[in-house]
Image (cartoon, rainbow, N blue to C red):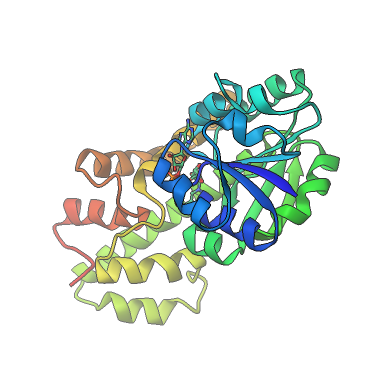
Length: 294
Ligand code: NAD
């Protein structure tokens, strides 16, 4: 199938490569020319605008940082809607505000382009091995039609409801992950202060109720002092800001989310915005005077 793919960063690049491996013909665009070259070397067709990537493709996928980027790429000058024919399906896999998904979908519908939101969880490793968890919103029949393609990038694709439901689900995911990482950093700083080896604590508790995917992935990074992303603090601030805006809009106070967001803002102010979100350990090092890593 001909697929337009726009946004070839940490996530988009391996996702697009998995679609190539599955036998699709890809028309790729990114404002970063190096990223486009990389995909062209892997067999994709290079294009020079979002409109060009979308023209002639029944399916267009976007994987961009945040709501304003998706609005610009889809609705802006030389955007997807300038190139896409009526009947085209747009799958936005970026993590953006649910309200923005709803606004973009309305603009798409006016041009007879069908849109679903389908953000992902799992990070770069799962994007590479094609085992992302995908959560989608929009017209169910459109979701069912594109599901086989989604499952060439992910191991699960769950329909969550009308347009924006995928991104509401993703916000829940990001709240749970962010608060879990903060809890791991807080607890491991405490044990370090009491003189207990964090590695032994990890081994002792990982099989119990405190065990989690977050603990398994992030505790070793904190213990090693390795904060190479992964998922950057800057992107997680974006998600928690979208969660807080959404929560304020619907009357759902998010006190813990607000606290973790401010901890991440502290890290960004200290110049650590590009670190992995496990760098919440550095916030605790700053306030406690002790670091989890040796
Ligand atoms: P990234 O910054 O690495 O990639 C984004 C890409 O979009 C870049 O290559 C950039 O050049 C391109 N881009 C930005 N504006 C553009 C425009 N106007 N026109 C064309 N290209 C444009 O980000 P990423 O890590 O790949 O994340 C993408 C999305 O996936 C984000 O919403 C993020 O929150 C989400 N996500 C990321 C991870 C992760 O671990 N990195 C995990 C799950 C979900």
